[in-house]
Amino acid sequence: MKIAIGGDHAGFPLKGPVVEQLRSWGHEVTDHGTHTPDPVDFPDIAQKVCDAVRRGQADRGIMVCGTGVGAAIAANKIPGIRAALCHDIYSAHQCVEHDDVNVMCLGAQIVGDALAYELIRAFLDARFSTEEHFRRRVRKLAEMEERFAQEMSRA
Image (tube, rainbow, N blue to C red):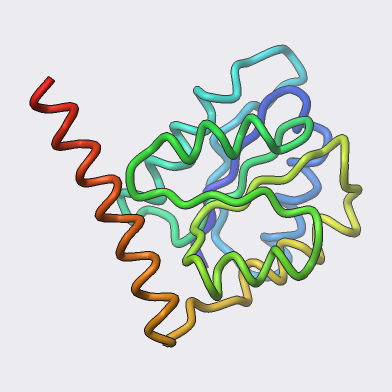
């Protein structure tokens, strides 16, 4: 699987080990930064990761910041992205199965390496359900985005 990953300075300590683990599992990983512990703004990194997912350059994205909250907020501002903050195994797979989430957000100050690996494995192994009620709900999310885009273009 092709994975786009990124994180800010608070996520930097976890991102490196995650990249190594993903590659050891055989995934193709594109690291969109940051590559140092120097302060950066998470919305800038989220834009890069999400653009890769939107353009089909990555199958899924992973964002790592301090708590994961800021990364999730930033990612969810981008049309076509459905991001979820995942700090437990159930949410990590359920968000894909029920909501077709394509970007997982993690908090480096919340989870350690071992739990992060388990969360990511659950996220990457999950598949969107074929059940109609889940698909209908995700279509409604896309329709909400489209309505908003149309309203913005008329403004």
